[in-house]
Length: 336
Image 1 (cartoon, helix red, strand yellow):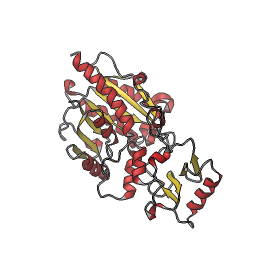
Image 2: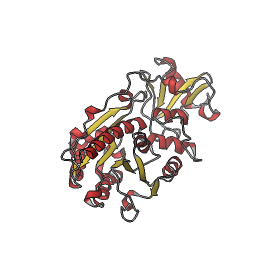
Image 3: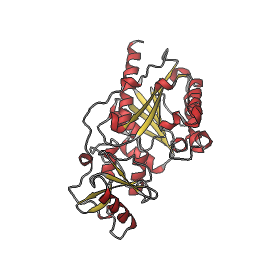
Image 4: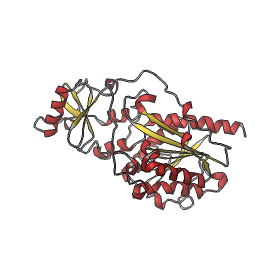
């Protein structure tokens, strides 16, 4: 069986995609207590190392060799919406721990493939210097990697899920196991031309929890209600921004973010027969590719559940990349 390890594992969105693609997850690492608690709840048989990645050690933490290493390293410093400090930001610097961990394995035990996930702007920011550094460090660790091995994908374009969420996947291949990088984004195709409707995911037929609704004397209620009245359709999702309300058109959900559950900007709202409410946890999870077949969270605060979902990799995108990597690895095994 093909195996995988996850750095910056969060609640396990990437792990869920790889699991669906047939990988056995051997270990995961994150420094967020709620993320680790949720990961353990969802994957009780997986070793979870809860600590800062900078303190992580292959030998000291007994990290078994894996076929694939997946790492959705922090994206805030590379995002167009952020301060764009890149590798000058301590969060951005954590990328360099990835090749260090890889290099700590004997050459023959290093991951055959490394999958990195981040925002598309990483490829172009700082006049390309950010991407050049990623490329340089992966190559020094013994991997084939270049721009042609990257896949920029929007959830709404390649899956049935109607969320406007664009991500960058970078796949590097070990020179110990491959004579070139066999990952080709063109191999990844949309599985269906039929995109789900918002109301396939959002349930407007039943009254939600009372706390989900805005009171009519709430200033945000007045803002959102006014925008809904002048908008294209009050069946759309409306997102509370820093100083205004944005209607997301074309039957799409806006990009879901980590701060959507704490009452500030980026909170997505809908209208139903009982008023104006934010998307509930189950609906947000569906927009991120999680299914209703599992209880996603242990007993942790709801605000943390929203945060973890907003930080998660979309399960469907991770599954698509995982399936392509599985094909590559199985072909490698057949060819000796």
